[in-house]
Length: 270
Ligand code: MN
Ligand code: MN
Image (tube, rainbow, N blue to C red; front, side, top):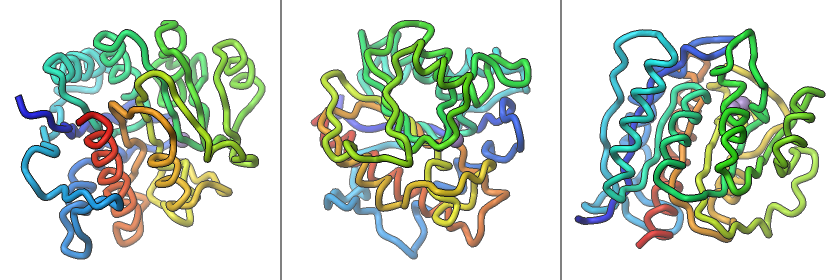
C-alpha cells in the first residue's frame, strides 16, 4: 500500500470550558488550504498537490454531545487508520480530542515522545468537574504512564495546581518567557506533536477562544515544528475558533501549519 498521511477532521468542542466554536474549524481550515491566495507547497519544497503524499478522510460525524461516546468514536476511528500503518494529522475541535487520539496512538506504538505546543499546560486533574475538559488531556495521557516524554513549548499560564501536576508527571516545560534550548530540541522515540493554536500570540492568530498575549510568532511555531531532531509520526491542530477570527487570518495560519506538518511527517517516514 502506498504510504500517505491521512488528515481527519474531529469537530468536537463540547469539553470547552469558556466558549464553543472549534467544532466548526475543519472545513474552514480546508477552505484556507485550497485558497487561490496561496500554494500547496511546504517551505521545504514538497508539492502537496500530488498523489501519494496525503489524503483527506473528511470529518468524523458525531451523533450527539456525550463526551464518552464521542471519545470512543474518535479512538476507534483513529486506531483503524493507524492499524493499517498510516500516519494521521487531526484537525480539532477543542484540545480535549487529543486524549482519545493519543490513547489510540499508544495502542499502536509501544512508546512515543509528545511535543505539546500551547499557551496552557492542559494538565488539570479536572476543570469545572470535567475530567475530559480541554484543560485536562495531558493529565489523562500522563496518568497512563505510556508516554516516554512530554515536552511542552510556549507555556505562559502555569498555576500552582498545574505546576504540581507537571512535577508529578515529569513534564519538561519550555516556558514562553525563556525559549533558550528550543533550537537544540531532540527526541529519541517517535514524536507525536499536539499544536494548540493559542500557543501563538493572539496578534498572529486571533481565532482562538482563550487570548493569551505574549505568545509565539507564526515563524517561531513553524521553526519549532521543523527544527527538532527526531521522527514525527502524527499530529493534531486544535482550538482554532472561527467565531473569533478576522478575515480567516487564523484559518490561513492553521492551513500553513497543516502543510508543514504533513510535509515533515511525509519526509520523516519515507
Ligand atoms: Mn490546549
Ligand atoms: Mn491553549
